[in-house]
Image 1 (spheres, helix red, strand yellow):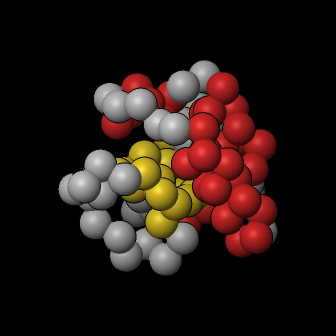
Image 2: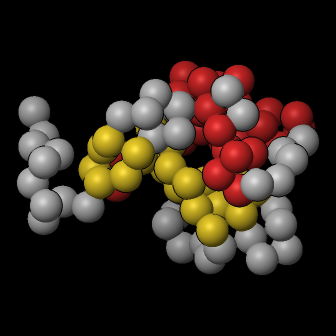
Length: 92
Ligand SMILES: [Zn+2]
């Protein structure tokens, strides 16, 4: 088991399940300066980020609870969620 209390490992909270996990186990969801929401599977996109576990279930939980909307303080269209879920499934 990974010791997430170890301060040398950067941890972030998943917006789906709310668990703290090492950054590399999470996927960043990014809001670009243009206001576009997308998954940052390469870790190279710029913009404001929120984190979600690398699985579709957590993305769906975040979607249902509207936590990403809250994190980015904006509306996220259904098709954007659909696209992210599709991408996440492909990336698994
Ligand atoms: Zn999660």
